[in-house]
Length: 190
Image 1: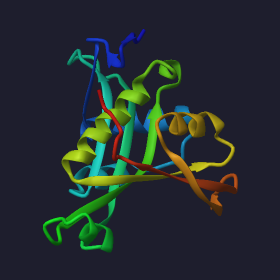
Image 2 (image 1 turned 30 degrees about the vertical axis):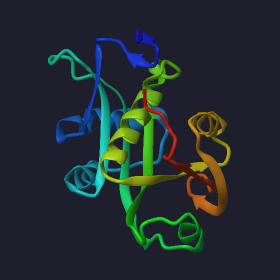
Image 3 (image 1 turned 180 degrees about the horizontal axis):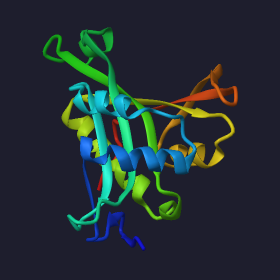
């Protein structure tokens, strides 16, 4: 059983970067959870891509290879812009400042069925937020099946906003996707 105290996972679990050693359990977990199928090669490519952040929640005991959940994501854009707007000039700032803001898209977040609603998804998201901040990521995007109300409620409770709908985005069965966005400014991870 997982116990969550004040948003922190019990001593039996840890969050680490995803490695090739996790792929077999991730494939089993994805089948158990009915998320869109990704092949072992797909996960291997993600793990080896420097433009991704992929995390797993695993048991702390080295002999226990139990993976309780994971999140996969990828950098999708970097925007450079100059801040020399009229408002900045009115506020008499010191001229223009170059700022970079990157964006990440979450591909999948998945929790083992018998460990859902115990805080693992929240902890994975918070760790993802921390990693995003260290990489100057300001916005996180995702798509979710329109009928997946549990996931929509989960994302909404973590600050994601519905932006628009993509018609027939998903297959097997065909379904629309809601595109959701989170601006990391002001989001706390403690």
